[in-house]
Image 1 (cartoon, rainbow, N blue to C red):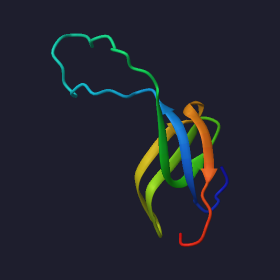
Image 2 (image 1 turned 90 degrees about the vertical axis):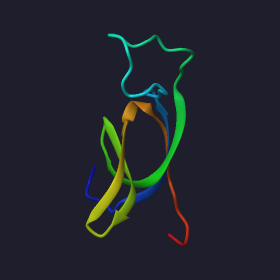
Image 3 (image 1 turned 60 degrees about the vertical axis):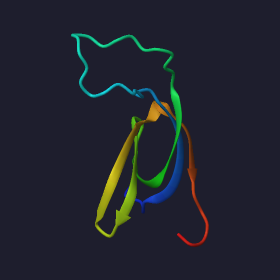
Length: 88
């Protein structure tokens, strides 16, 4: 991606790694998933990077700094909408 100014976007994408189990579990292997499926997500933020493999969005952007980075595999993205309007 060229060095363009970050754009405010809304991204619809599928999250394949969604779980409710605690970080540490007993046993030497995980339990099989129970009725899990892909979860359609909506992430809103500043698009700071995009190539054939990844989309990177940040939730907080200042002059020379950023925070709260979300990195989404490009194959999981279903739609990217550039947000426009006054007051941003």
